[in-house]
Image (cartoon, rainbow, N blue to C red):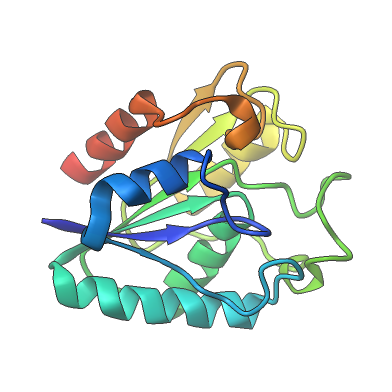
Length: 181
């Protein structure tokens, strides 16, 4: 069995977002982080929220999958570096480029100094070839630096609610492939 920790990006994920659809599908096997700083993300607050959600998820099942989107990818990576948990996999979708022009610098200043370092677990970075928050070259670089497998998705932008993915079956298959490794 696998428990899932849902780590959305800035402002959370609305009901149309694939993360919310998956969370509903997974029911009690899923735990969404609950930081106090959704709109003005504070990295220590988000890391603490991941730790709390992981604590709940790891008691339910032996294996935990972090399912992160956007800014949540950076919070997840930072938590992984600190916590070094066992039996975890990281599914990182559409990480924004903290050095890119579209990064929400004013809203999320505590995320600006982050850089990708090798992750202590199996990981997959899924990025859009036309993501306005991160170009394909930068996302490939993050995957290499995190020592994660990379997957480029064509024509779905930031891979969010506006991408019209619904329950995103192809994403579920990518996640299953990560968990089967």
